[in-house]
Length: 393
Ligand code: PLP
Image (cartoon, protein in one colour):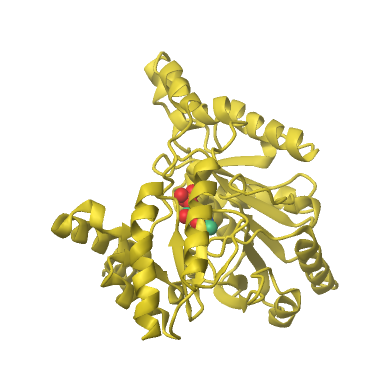
């Protein structure tokens, strides 16, 4: 029998992918330069030259090293390189035993959810949130509990999290710099969240785990991105090089279970078991080697910063309101009518392709991925202006 849940997920695809496909069709019909696709989070900045140099060096390796299986959690040298890089940056004392290489953050978060939840548990997400979280939580047979972020700052609302915690709460997922709002959670916010979780942990057999999904950690415009395990002990960090090194198609990232966590000795084997169960072992060997060489390679955020300035200045001039993004490459903008889906349909008439907020768990907003070419944003501005005027008449 075909599994109906899997069938439905495959047949539907995500709203973001649907908009992207529509954009491709439209580009074929009227010309690529006339369609302004803000749907995907595919980095427009090229991967740094150090990535290609590393690949060229690896090509000299014998085939069994270049293409062979690595150990399930990854090559010892890459796990060590990741641990040492974190130690240099955050003053920690991690070792390779704390790091499990993955096929991107999608695998990191899925594996972690499987490792720290049991069927029937609840996992809190902060809305608006990355839509795949709901799918991954459901796949772990847990329940996704949406908690609204503060609707002005889009920081976590600690009191709302406290109110949502039940005896079944197993984990909270946070994502900072945030997709879709661009908010970067402040130290103060994270400390307040830690206080809520520590208070809830009193008398519990196991702590509530904080899953910190951080694919955008390096993409910030001056804000501090605090190291979450130094604020809350039971934090598991999920990372990926998809955005920081512009390698989303290469599928490489990691899970870190800090050795400072009391239950690390049980959590890391559970992460490994989840990887095995899900078939996510042995991240791509070539790109594990790239990570060894590029672990400290800075992200090129300059292009995103320019795009952000261009877009935010123009949209505020046309009367749109948005959350000033401190990180990632998304702009979270208030729709010009209550129904975000209707707004995004109307935007299509101007060949503008934003993503309505409904898919992120809240009404009334839309997301713009500004990880696209500067000149596409520039050419789209008259359309944004006309769309706003259209709503005024
Ligand atoms: N988490 C968030 C918040 C994301 O935005 C994405 C991708 O856009 C992912 C996870 C998945 O990233 P990856 O490509 O590394 O699987």
